[in-house]
Length: 296
Image 1 (spheres, rainbow, N blue to C red):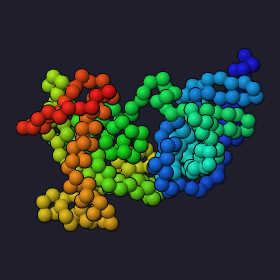
Image 2 (cartoon, rainbow, N blue to C red; image 1 turned 30 degrees about the vertical axis):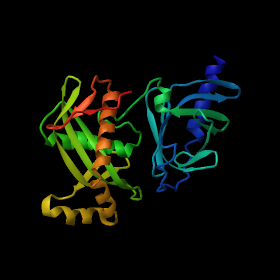
Image 3 (cartoon, rainbow, N blue to C red; image 1 turned 135 degrees about the vertical axis):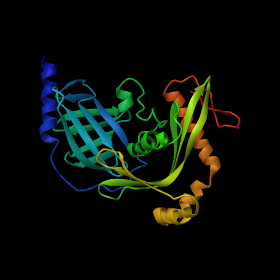
Image 4 (cartoon, rainbow, N blue to C red; image 1 turned 120 degrees about the vertical axis):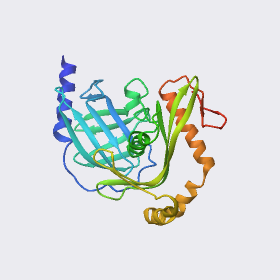
């Protein structure tokens, strides 16, 4: 009973003292940091007592632009969402905004200390006891919410514009990502989607297409709010130059690299098959030889 009481008191201390506004920050490009992603608290210690806690009580999401959220969930299911900014330190990182905390890297996860309470976080998929792939429905195996939004939009909004099929899998070729706008992330890219039917151990492509352009992703909920597409035919070059601006040459390099695009497609289709546990070994375009997938 004493141990449980101590843990409850320490949780209350975090709720009371951690959420102190400090403001500022954000806009920094931290997309290459190993800390980008979602973390959940799996254990804590206080006053010589320690114990496991439900990972859903504290969830920390760090975005590549230096923003993020800390969500705390009370016993009745009530959530308190704290908007934060974060920056790297010598031994980990620190957060500001609604929640000011310092995190250190202990090799197995990250640790925050608040008023004598030590809270240990691990990546969400590790804490759940199983591998979690939020992008499994779209073939995206990463953990960047901005990229996930692009895959989701292609599969749910663009794929239905083509002939109906059993499975839709996008291929997202990102040219440049701009995190500087206050309310959105702007993604410049060459976006593809293919629709497949299952025939034995082969995914047969029956429709799909290419949609280069610029996606606008909301920072508040990571959904695509607008998609500005390059025009067709004689409108291709002028609209591409207008939309991509200083990134036009980079776009054309990506757009013309069919070898890389085919390899990325193979990887994405393989990820889709592996993440969803499908007994599929190939994909095939009409009139072409089957392409063997990478299997786990």
